[in-house]
Length: 274
Image (cartoon, rainbow, N blue to C red; front, side, top):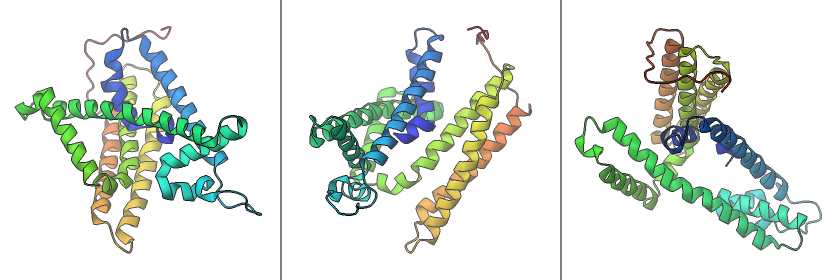
């Protein structure tokens, strides 16, 4: 929830590949994109407030607090981040509205969170399907069939989930997501420069994302390789992603310096008044 409200590469894929195709008119994009960004930001802030304000980080003096239910670390250990959010939300709402029990408020929080997860699943399948089609459809004719690719994506996701493979790759998800966000920002910056519009609003965030992602991946790679039980797989993935991040930054700079030809065809550039 916090990543969604800050910056997320996955969201750029959703907006570019799905939301953009659902607009009746291009002018709707500004309100939907900007409104969605603000709403996601509110969700992120509320999430932080619920966890920080509703859970105890250490047991208070004198006791009297059920740390198994209201302790931050205890909630994470027993039920993960979903339970931590639910318990924090339940405690805050119960303190504000005593007529609503902690249990009911927690159930509402988890139910709301599940709606995020469930709607994300079908969106992720759709995005993966058209990414596979666009990337490999020309080389492999079978991948042009949307039904065949959809089945392939669902089966692959099932195998990753059923075999707990997701736990092996999840630690690297955050950095990968932010790297995609940097790519999206660089693409937008390049387009803005091509149409002679200001770029600093997206270029500086893109540079920030690349630098922080490389730093985070470097730290993670060091942790993976130097752990008592080294995780060579994730360490190698982190190193590869560092290389990709450097490549993305280099290609973006080449484009922004005019060393890459950018061709924009059949596109109407809205006036500033619009």
